[in-house]
Image (cartoon, rainbow, N blue to C red; front, side, top):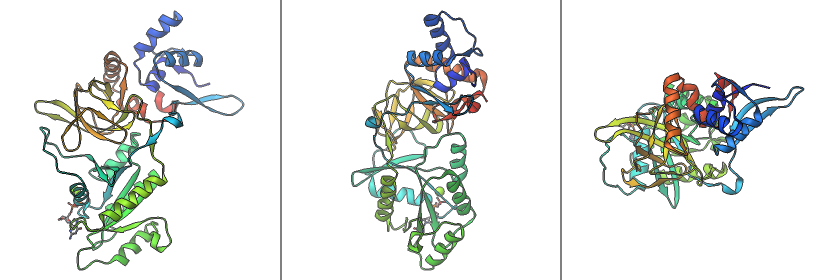
Length: 373
Ligand code: GDP
Ligand code: MG
């Protein structure tokens, strides 16, 4: 059996070691150090006490070993359909930003600009009563950096390929990152309004990258659009919604929120501002949050139109204020019972300078190897 220490348990549960030690003392009368090995039953009892659902994954064999500690899955009856989170990738100048703007302007009523002026990292649109969340990363590097940190927020990718240019180096790189991630992809063949487009060449280029268009019997939908003129956007949105439906994206909204920071920055007057995307649960004003090495109570929340909001359900991107420092892209956040837990955990992380390992704690299954680093 892989030994479990107070430290690894703390990291797996996202709760401060101090809280675990204090329970061990109160409930079991045991004084332990952070590196002390604890029994599995004891760990489960501690988890129960702290309100964390823990389950131990085992590897079958002569000697049964615990290989993973994972947060317990939500019960199926608690899961409800959530909006898809879609990342837009493609070669520079192929029209990613224009597409994103165009989708947004045509489908979202322009709101008043709020006090926070910072470029938008993610936003949500409403299409015929269906919400879709788009994440605008600077490119495939950000996409794979987030994934390498265990921040797998993307459900789908829209690969933008300009019809007058075809597959270019960053298109090919994006394709290989998407393939490695296993995330479904829809191609937006953009700029079809231009006179000198070559649709066949784009399809051939894609095929050469082992992305076989569905019109050629493959699995990848290629939707013709003009981000500039607003052509084909309904088609693209319908395709994305169909893909989302196929993958049955669900989350439990009735639990403390967990999610990922897409971007953090300092705003004059408001201090630290973080773009968060909620993955499970609902984030509310007043929640005590730990995000990477930052912590605090959520003081205010803003949607992508800078409108103040009170709560954010799964897949909703929000800007929040109230964290003591600026968190980084890819930092996981968790709502904890009280601010003391958040502070203690943040301080532990700052001390140990092990944020990379520690911040993975809410990212789904982790191996003990990961946790123990
Ligand atoms: P990004 O680098 O992929 O984000 O590309 P941008 O969205 O910044 O677009 C690059 C250039 O292509 C800009 O000058 C856009 O106006 C232009 N562009 C984007 N989409 C279209 C389109 O559908 N048709 C035409 N003709 N130009 C487009
Ligand atoms: Mg751009």
